[in-house]
Length: 318
Length: 304
Image 1 (cartoon, one colour):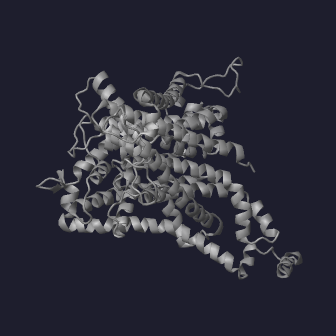
Image 2 (cartoon, each protein chain N blue to C red; image 1 turned 180 degrees about the vertical axis):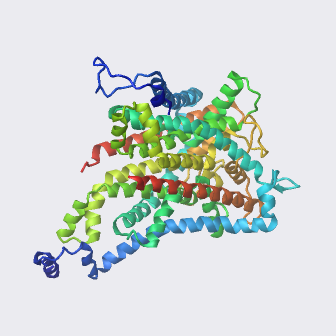
Image 3 (tube, helix red, strand yellow; image 1 turned 90 degrees about the vertical axis):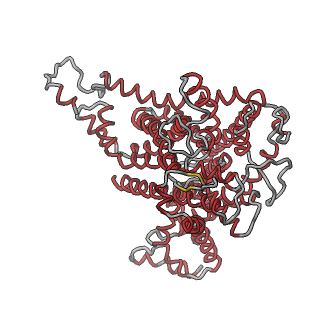
């Protein structure tokens, strides 16, 4: 203790106050051990990423030893379990594209609309009620969404009410419900981005005679654009990686989807379905799971990096 | 772009109030815009209500004690979700035990002790952001590869599922905990250090107790996400017919979402009703957990 009081006596002599970090010079083994433990815990997150990469890469490498990469990426027939097996991943990719695009067509306008309403129009009290209600949508398990998509959207709305020529499954039903699931994701990030725009900009706009719509569309929206793009990009990544809705409602037949009323198997849908069959570790079937998983991981990783870039920009803006 | 050019410069009449701050708010386009905004929110809520109502209508017939006490069966009238309920409790309990210490420790390191300028810490930070957006099914593949590497042949064991769920929600808990810790004002730390506490004592006795409500809220929300998650467990082979109570970390198990998935895929109407009833049960538990999280946040969160 004496050393501490001697040292703290320092600043009184007129020197700049020493930063508290200077105490760290003292040996404290317990403290050191705890900090080491904390650092290890943080390091585990890195190990997880490395683990994902290794876990996906090793089986994928043995997969690509048997199936040429180009045939995998550009082949148009996906039939890994058939006698004349074919490993063209494009059917899975097109199905994923369909569900993702349909989901975005729903989620982007409605998500941004909700975000603008919450950020620019709603009074704090109204917002306090509406926001948690909207977030309930994000809390519903995806398997329940899948059940809803299959039973109600596909079975009742598309087939019985609208009389559309569609079977038991369709990428349309899966995409529509997935879009609703993503609305809160997009709404909440876009709202944060718009709330971060300084109100001086809004006041300036209002002082020039603009109404709230003009202020929102021409001042706030452009100022928050990078955050809004990040919200949409994150929405894309959620849609690409979503599994249960497509596994239940989009069907399990891998084919080049040309019509949203067709069924189709997405990348995630294939992994979920293939995992049901007990495949032997090291077999080509087992390795196929990881090759598709690797492609999925790389796509979402790329999307996330873009998103993080955009978020950085909007954070630094003001 | 059109509005300023089309309105000619007007002479301002004395009768027109200048400073209402509501100029142009009642224009048709502005009203239409507001209507569209409300419509987007309306669509979201309409789907939410439709979903809840249809699930309830489908499942109400099967909502009985049988659902909780009976084992799955080939006869939908007899079948229940008892092993799935217990399996969910086991899986989420194990996940909580694994995730909470790890996640909180990592968050404390990043927020209190890490030097932001060091490349390692920057990397960890970027990494956590990235991990939070990795599709859940990839975590299933990771756990699958890990268990295969250890030579485990039957991968449908509680600890395997908990491992996948832990990796899945770890970034969520880290991010929530960091925010809670960040909300504790600097002055608390400075005060503690000035009184002679070491950095760790400051963290343990001042910062962490002050951020418990935030951490608890974030953790409950993360665990509720794990409870509703099915994809990674599906990869690990949790879609099995279980007619016993799971009783340990190495026990076989199935969970509520997997049970719903299973019953959804059956052709008989009776099983769809069971899937609906199980969904009601799962949603009720999730709503309770969320309500608890919101209650903790509102009741205990300090405003500095």
